[in-house]
Length: 205
Image 1 (cartoon, rainbow, N blue to C red):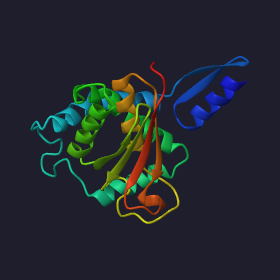
Image 2: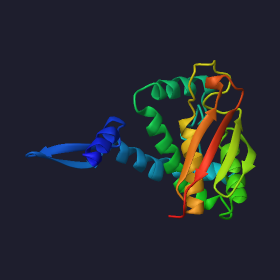
Image 3: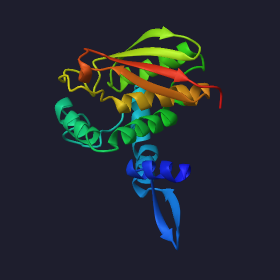
């Protein structure tokens, strides 16, 4: 019953689905999740790596280019975040991107080196400017200034930077080989002029 309850939660968040077989249910990863993972790996990863390595690449849109208005981007992001379960999906997308690109950017597995590589990823992709507030063996505190998801937005009483949290957690997890959890404690959405995350590392995988 515990497994069934967790599967129902994952289904509500869009990660899994099922089909009935007699009285039983056959569970599987949802098509939407698998499609998102395919797009990240096959389509977007090469462009992201080119940006991180400062390589020139042909824009996808020949006339308009690859960059759009921050406000237009945020309209779509906020619409997703306000949907039920979208926060988990945005977090997961950040994790998947980190697992694909961070091994090629981060130089070693120490917490400080992971932060330096993460800061490079955030700055080159124009996601935000990172500042290391504290670093212990099992806990890292990171601030984001000029965060692409929330900078300038009003106090809405909730944090909104799930993608950024997933990107941080995924990077620490894949490099340190320890389960990582990113908890956003401060945000423009809760009245601050920066974001702040506590990254907690569990025992080695």
